[in-house]
Image 1 (cartoon, rainbow, N blue to C red):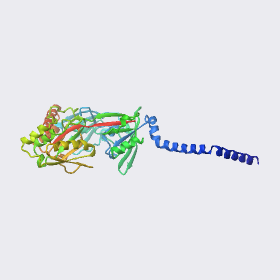
Image 2 (image 1 turned 45 degrees about the horizontal axis):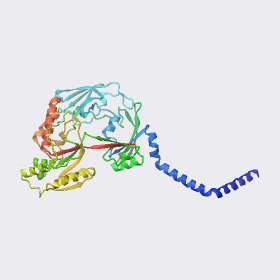
Image 3 (image 1 turned 90 degrees about the vertical axis):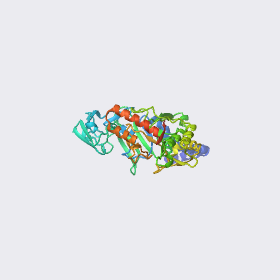
Image 4 (image 1 turned 180 degrees about the vertical axis):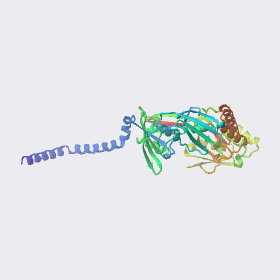
Length: 444
């Protein structure tokens, strides 16, 4: 009976309390529920400053598979026989030193001892697994590797800077793979854990477009945006830093289709180059990275000069009124492409702009970004026999320089060859090297 009386007293008390304060209780409950939902939504953003010291979440724009990871992620996971210094020259990495023999057809690499793969097994010469056409890798001992080529190939040490892996992305670097998340064969994310002290955990998330990556940053899915072309007003965010960087290992280039009758004459290509306006980014003067050991700064300069452009057309007796060109490009370069088209219109050339989603199979003029190889060898880009020579440009003189450059082991002789190559290529103007892009890192 006493329990019943106490329960009845409790319910009377509760009824009286609700009757007097019910409105306040209901409002408080609703407000609390809404705050709870808001905290769930904002949780990634609120908590990220306190967890960033443990895990850095980085957005990468692009579509990748486990075998096509960006090179800067590969270098976190493993190493090559060599690495590259700021000038693009090969320096020791897994190999302590090497020498070229038989006029560059044989290389002997001496390897570091005491190195271990992430699975705990020792690194030995027989582990070197580069799959290069026409190249044989023959272990002489656990620490000496012989590389045999059919023909002399001086860029080999630079190519061997590519990190090596065992199956499953097992490497030798300061990080190892903790977890992979795939959709089909495409990477959605990859988590890396350090093998050395005082390094943060890293999680790279992949997004198909820059816009998708920026949205992910705003929602707190990632803390860092790497190599984006626009800052999206992030510099005004109080807790966000924006760091610009000019990437001298990339070139934004205007490629001519030199098979078109109108673009076959060098004077026409040069005239069009002189009509191109200047851009705020770091101007590019040729096909090589300006930090390269083989860079030539003494090449022809195409500074904006409409009058000179017109005089070249007049000198060649060319009529521009009937000429028509289409510049193909991607959306991120649309503004600059339109500026170029307007300048060419001023010469009397009807100029169209086409925005592409993928690299077109054919074009009149193509404006794209291209990574510059570390070694000055650009045989695959400009030799007349190569399908990857997208301009269709053919020059016996440049062909010979490219052939000699990759056969010559002596560095001083190579330097002279590639100095000449740059000078002749820029003079012939099968393409115009516009600028080195400025990209941004945005970090919370």
